[in-house]
Image (cartoon, rainbow, N blue to C red; front, side):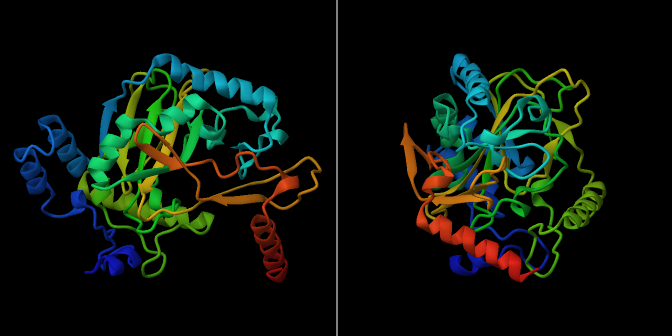
Length: 347
């Protein structure tokens, strides 16, 4: 199969994701050993990559200054005081401008901040951490690019899922994610949960070739399908309890989520980033609602191709950074207007 046809086909006839990545190939164990013997990777790298192939994830501890991890949390406190219009958060609804946030009512378990790296230098340093990129590029076997960050103060309690049904990349297999603990994480605060080996499972197809969730009812269809396969194959959910600075890197297809919070008084401060490959991910879009009687009733939308680089790592700038309803780019205004008219035509 050509690279072009692989890029256009998401899953094969058995529902398994089509991938041109070297670690997804049947000969991945042999290729890892070959590279180790040739001195292209170390013994430790070979061991970790073999674990990634078999289990769908790897866990490392970052040599990242502890004070910088704490600074990310301090920056979040400041941003709640400042409430910038160009920063998006979500609590029980779509992403919304933090200028419209009500801290007493919405800074609660379940909220998240999108693209914090656009407003916190410490978060940007973690977004572009060279240690993480080292492992990403061993897995991708080509240059990686970060394109989205998410900050969580409490456990997300997000249901088990697989990233490609929500996060779109071309090809779909060119997707990795990391989760970094900004504090020690125990079993009661709703730690990350995951299912080792689930990255090899087939996907539920809503129609031939479509795995993306388009409606709320789609989730349960996909979940029940995955649940049956996990039970049949004896795959069991595990919790990622860890120390501050630990990093969990997972395969696009790994089933994961946020476990139940058993003690609501405990936070689970963490930072999540999604990545793709430089040659395949060219633009990043972002959107958020504006409330409070503001003059821009439609969602604020913008896209960017701006790449920021640091210590050999690269990522997209936060697409909404420095954006204000009064100075939206013409392209963004036209797109918002087009969306508004489409909604009217659809009734």
